[in-house]
Image (cartoon, rainbow, N blue to C red):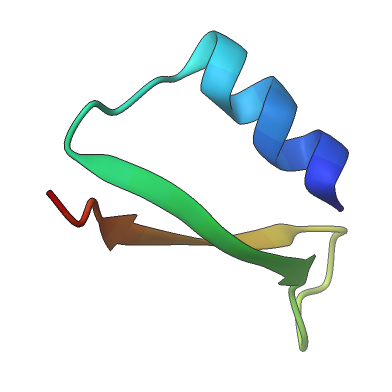
Length: 42
């Protein structure tokens, strides 16, 4: 799922945050992906 993070960084860059764990969402009726967003350690 690292490719998902690469795509997100190219299309939706948050300077103060980094993308964390990426996983398939559980319990959704439709396909969905959960992406963790964490504050950047400066």
